[in-house]
Amino acid sequence: MKIKYTRLGEIPIIVADNELGLKVYFSCYGASIYAIFFDGKIMTLTPKTSKGFARSDIYFGKTIGAIAGRVKDGKVEINGKTYQMFTNEGKNTLHGGDFCVSKFLFSGKVMNNNETAFSIRYLFKKKKMKDGLPGNVEYIVSYYLSAKENLLLCDMKAIPSEDTLISMTNHSYFCLGDENLNNLLLTIPAKRFVHPNEEDLIMTEERDIIPCLDFNKRKPIMRDIEDPYLVNSKTLGYDHYFVLDDSKKPVILENQHYKLEITSDMEGIVIYSDNYPDECEVVNTKTCKTHRGIALEPEDHPHKLMVTKKGDTYHREIIYKFFKK
Ligand code: G6D
Image (cartoon, rainbow, N blue to C red):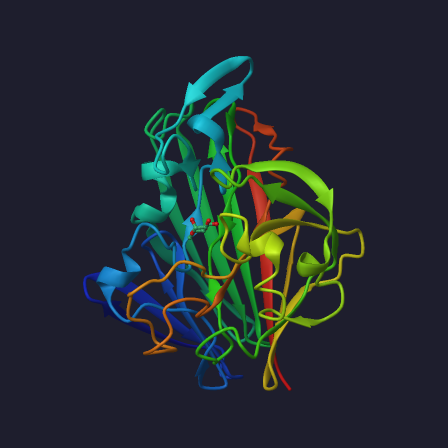
């Protein structure tokens, strides 16, 4: 497998090309996927500059931790004790607050590069209470790019020195070579979702799927985007946690040329359709300011976060498989 070291401004990047059509740009900044090219086309919503990539509010391709999603009032309870996280969205905490691991430089090491796969491992040690949560936490994020098929595995681990809460994801947005979501179709095997409240998008109760959120049968992403449920909510589009069913079927994003299948060992997935107008220069479009790509974030159920015990390993995996039609 061909690899190349490069930089985006001051940000180190390593490019791995499986020579089957899949080329992935990895960065130690937030242990992230900076870009994915497949069949020569850009598959991800990728900022053109290091300034854009360093934006702390869009999380382009970044690893999210300690806690993906929103935490009401930034407060969590661990073993009967309440901890206050840093609030970065009004009174709430989004994606771990100001000390989300997405904002830090990991140390990277190429672990493998042979005829089977390329793998790189990123490490970051979070000091206890730095983010308001107990425990020194060693984050270990590894990526494996197969040389045998167009498959990318994201392996996320975290080992705390004390009991603490961890819920990670990768926050990549996908466009499959298009400049917006207009021609992208989505399939999500989910009959339940978690409703974000109208006031501040905090996840409330789980509900049965409703038509505008029903992607059990392949559907154009933008078909129901003007549905009153979406328009009247604060989300301005899709920004919802889908509880996947037991079928173990992949979430599928596709257009007329490409298909992306995503599977993970997590109970659900957040779908965010890039709803807020943004001026960041991105590779796939010069004109669109919203709906330029869709974030597909496999995540633990927001109401079922489990304490990771001292010395245990929190471990989740996400698999991305690309196909040319
Ligand atoms: C917005 O509500 C959305 C989040 O779900 C997303 O992760 C973020 O933008 C990038 O806050």
